[in-house]
Image (cartoon, rainbow, N blue to C red; front, side, top):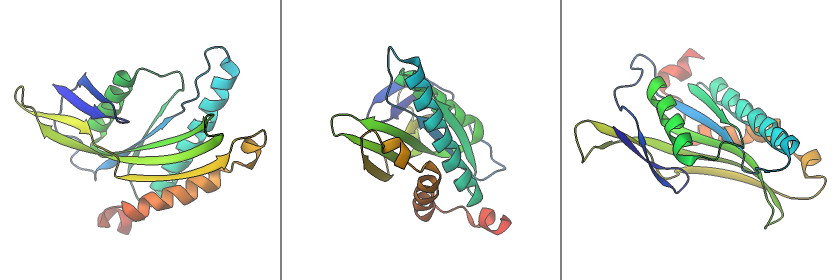
Length: 188
């Protein structure tokens, strides 16, 4: 099978069987963490970006779980630049866990705008008819949720950054738009 992916704004084809997910549990969200500031020459900088993004991803996922959502984490290192492979990993994880959403978590520096960006962006996972054969394809849809905080990028940006508080605020924004199913809310 093939999966047509728009992640982010990139059409990618990847091999994927689109059978039924985990039917006994409510649908879940794949919480994908991914940094964007790859340095080809500075391994320590890459490690720092990976640690920061992994921490933020874990905090957002934890907040969603506390709110009653079922989540599956998929932190990707900043060195993971192969978008078709990343999309396949995301859809494989979604397929295995029965997820119907992707939530990207990221913290990155926009050097051109001199801004430190903290962003959550949600996408539905859709099943679409396979025009080339039997079955269905999984596709990551266009973003239907986004929340972002921008800070001036300077030497003190990381001192001012409060990932715990940002994860709490931004995850709450997501939960307001995508509340847990009633059964999950009652179980808390």
